[in-house]
Length: 115
Length: 112
Image (cartoon, rainbow over all chains, first blue to last red; front, side):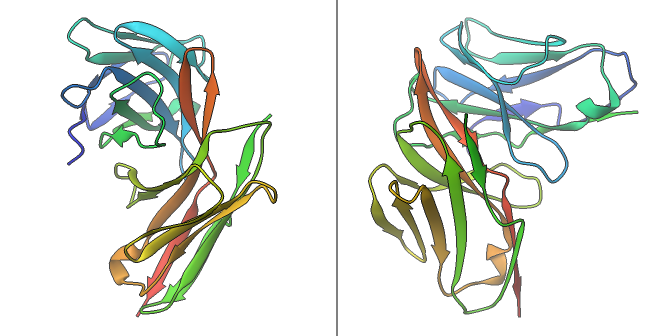
């Protein structure tokens, strides 16, 4: 157990809909990262927050947005969903904004299926 | 740009040694990490090479050669539970943060 909690574990929805994925980082971690993993693919970096502020953006679509709240939990909002958005969405956390050991702590992921 | 290439699948037998390679093309990075992922579960950290050379952690070792743009993960005394996907990841800086860029992943199948 990494200490990172993600909800929901599974989500099935229809095209055009909007969903929100939630992540609670490890106690004491200030940084939250979101990654997308499509079927049999690697992990694609989406976005990072540190202590409530956006710090880095990756290949995140304009239909997607995220935020980190004062209690440090984060939410990833996916809107106007398409079939291709079906994927595992992982949240990871670290203490600092600049992890220098290459170690992130990942949650179990949220599996999104768009029908 | 940046890309990391790994073999898509590797098969080995229990008790054997297997090497999973990772080649990359990037203009700069701090180090190379390795992660293990079982059946779509949470990726878990295995090792990190900041410098060239070999890092050993129990049955697992990781190697980095910046001059060859190459690294590998070596798994010894393979066990059935080692069947999983393995990802290399570059730790890159930029602006106010560092971030991990993951490779394509290698599915390791350990056979009895």
